[in-house]
Image (cartoon, rainbow, N blue to C red):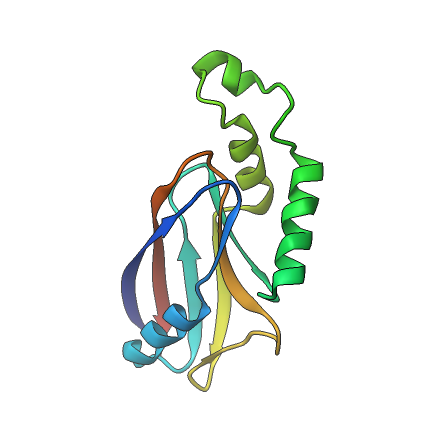
Length: 139
């Protein structure tokens, strides 16, 4: 078994910024030389998440609206009362979606659906520099 590690760095605007990571992940997967195994992606921090979606403006807008209905920004959060930083909603949103993805690799390609892309969501209330850790395991 081989293991390939890479760290991506992205600048985000916050406020539910959604970035398509798929091209970058494919590029690094090709460099890894691994053709059968698993891609693991992880975003450190408690106000960002990873998921997959059709990265199309309508679906992205729908996802943002759904997230806002589930964990609205304009309601009281205990985190904000304690810390005063106004991003309690961002912590809840990130916890609901989660910080990691695991994608199978077969014949050197990630097994994603035709319209399925890997996205980073930054929920914080300010711009950030986000890291996404990639680990490819296989042969």
